[in-house]
Each structure stands twice: as C-alpha cells, then as structure tokens.
Length: 575
Image (cartoon, rainbow, N blue to C red; front, top):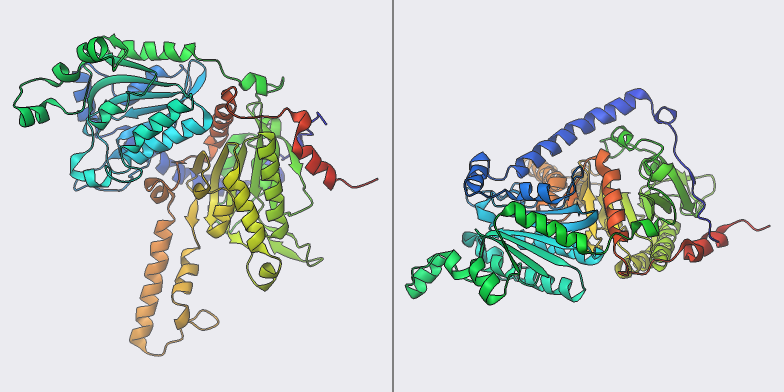
C-alpha cells in the first residue's frame, strides 16, 4: 500500500476550550515563559559586559557573536544544555551554561552541531560538567551524522575544580574519544582556533578534518607560564604553539587566517563543500507546511495544574504539517495515541499520552484514568515503536505520564513482562528518537516512554515539566508509612513525636517538589533543554530535518513497504 492515509485532526480552539480557560492557561504559562526568557538572557550574557569588552579589546568576537556570523542569515540556533550548572556555585563563581555553547545551527543550508567555548567565562575554561556537555553534543551529532564545528577558545580545565572534571569516565579526555568516534564514523569535523587552546583545549581540534588558526591563536600542551616554571625558558605561548608553528612546521593545523571573521567565512565555505541535505528526497514530493491549527495556541491548551486534562489530539494537530495525522490502532489501548504525521514535509512517528478518562476493555461500561500505562497501551506502543524502527521513521515521544498501572489485576495481566518488551524495543531501536516531557514524567512510565536513560538523541522539557519517581506528597506518605493509618493520617499520640513527623513529612514533600523543578534537571543534565510551548513546532522541524539530512547514514524505507501498513491492516474490520 503506497498511500499513507493522513487525515485531518483537531479543531478550532473554541470548539473544545472556553475562552476563560484558554486565557487562564496562557496567563499562567506566560509567567513561566518569562522566567525562561530571562534566565536564557542571563546565560547568554556570560560573565557580563566587562568580560565581553575584554574579548573585543583583543580584536576578537565573543563565542555567540561567532555563531551568529557563522549560521545562515535569518535562521535561529537551537541551543542544548543552556542550563547546565544552573544555580551551582564554585566558591563565589558561577559557570553559565558550563562555559560552553552547544547548538544546532543551519550553515549553508545544512544542519550542524556547533560547539563553542564561551570566552566571556574564565577564558572558555572547562568546569565540572563542561566535558559531559560537549560529549552530549558530540553524541547528538554522531547519532544524526551531522557535521560538527568547533569554535575553540579554551584555556583548559578550571584548575580549582579539576578533580571534578578531569579523571572520570566522562571526564575531559572523553571529548577526544568522541572526536575519534566521529572521525571513525565519517562525520565531518571542522575547527576554528581563535585564542587560548591549552592542554585539553589544544587537543580538542586536532582530530578535525580541517583546522583554521587565527593570528591570535595558539595550541599547546602547556602554556608559557608552565614552561617558564618547569624549564626556565622565557617564551610566549604564540612562540610555542602559534600558527607559525602549527600551520607551517608541525602540520597540526591546516590554514592560517588573519582574524575571526576570515576564519568563520572559510568554515562556512568548508560546510558548503559537503553534500547537500537529503530532506527533499525523503519528502517524497511533499512540501513543508505549517499546521492548519496554529501551533502558538499550545500556550493556552496546557493547564499548569498537572491534575487537569487536555486533548492529546489537539496537541498533535498543532505540531504536524497541515494538521494531518494517521492514527494507528485507535480502538486499542486508548490511553495511548500513536501514529504518523509529517513535520517539515518529513514523516515522523508520534507517541503521546491521552489525558482524562478512557474506556476500560476489561470492565465493560467502566472508565479508567489515562496518563497511565495499561496492558493494551503498552503492547500497542511497543508494536508501533518496532514498526517505526523497521521502517526507518524517527520517533517523537510526547510524555505526560503518571506511571504504570499497579495492583493485583495489573500484576496478573503481566505488566512487568509487557513493560520489559517495550523497554527492550526502545533500548535497541536504531532510528533517531526524540523525547518531549510535556508535564508529568513519573516513575517507570518515564523510562518506558524513551526517557533519558533510554538514550533519545534529544530530550526536551517545558516549564511545566515535573520529572520524578512520584509526587512529593505521595513520596512523603511512602517514607513515613509506618507512622500512618489506613487513611494516611498520623497514627501517633505523643504530641512531640507527632509534630516531628509532620515536620519531616512537610520537609520531604518540599524537597521533592524542589527536585522536580525542570531547571534542576537541566542543571544536572537530566534533560537537554527547556523550551517554550510555542517553540515546540520549530524544535520538531529542526530535529526532523536533522534526522533525515544525511544520505546513507541509516536505512529509511519508502512508504510502499512500511510494516505499519501491515499492522494497520490486521486491525481493520473484516468484510
């Protein structure tokens, strides 16, 4: 069957949501979006105007200015890891964004991964989690076969904290292993060296296919100060490892250029020499198109109170091209919606949790809460995930989940084994998978729906995301269960002990609620980026194009021979 039966979904906003509710949702979200925008701006400022002025005084551009000149005019970058180290102090110092910018950027019409040391933060030093952030960006590029551009301006490890960034399995040296992995996989790597590149900063560009050095740049295992102390030699770092040495003598760099702007121009020219994007081929004659239902309306659809519901189909209608969608197995496992839509003209698989109440097939005329995984839903999602992997269709997981069903009946139905099947599927899939935590991401449900431990290429959170094993109140009850009666009331007579238990439960609940803050998850690299709801469509366009850009990187079937057609045919009524 060649035809992919995409059909209209969704409706105008006033058909399913009253104006007062829409405005209330949008107002609550606007405040959170404002906080996100403010914190992004603070990160982008690095250590402030004084440090930016120091960079300019040397005749150099800041890292973000370099990216702005490098990317295609009129396009935006999509940063990942913006809030790594958010709220973390190193003595009196902070390291905004861990001192490095990592971003998807379109250069000469091709999506690339740009990794740029922030030279306004301790001269681009590597802090705790800086290596892990760089490695995460390299992993994304490797999984998607995206060219990598390194904008190197790095004075090496931030030495007072070297014990937390040097020795471990993902310490600074692992960056160079990732360089080698990318080279072995044939992923192009291009480096511009713009200033201090000491120790690890000097190693970072070496395995790249092209290395450009400006007149102010140097790459050294040890800088002039260390050599003076160790060997009593009075040399400058440029004497030791500047472009005169590495372009004309050692061969560790390829081209010597006068300044930042020239280097960036030549890096763009290198990207232009690479093969163009394969996206047009994989659109199968279709053109990219906006959703018919405006994606900006997502800001008013989601209630900030996670106990309140919304329509999953209405979310999909505001994410897929022309609001057209092919839902697979709609009458089975109704708590889950799975199917195919186009994003930027490219086929993508979608899995989303339905909210509210759904029919209970085990108990006729009964209802059960959605946002939970039951037997049929798990089986449906596993079969769909396998079929998408077989067909080469990238997968988007839209999570708003409270976890698995629990209780005697759930165990009798074998949810452990069905869940294991889904986990196996998602663990072994080869297609790119992208996860978006819309609101709740709780318990084993977070794992089963391709959460970060199951290595999605990118995991996004929103300002409403709550990532945890369970809610704060529930966890407090579990922690103090032996002191509570069947109604979860404190079953202690002694006033002092009772007050101590009340205080302990309140502190536990507050701590867990704080741990569920998406900025804490982003700071710890438990999620890749926090995005606004009105940015979700743009993010999916970027990820779809990045997934399909490379030619020959993975197998993608033409739609005539999709396994999904077989799955749908077996569920059709007979006769």
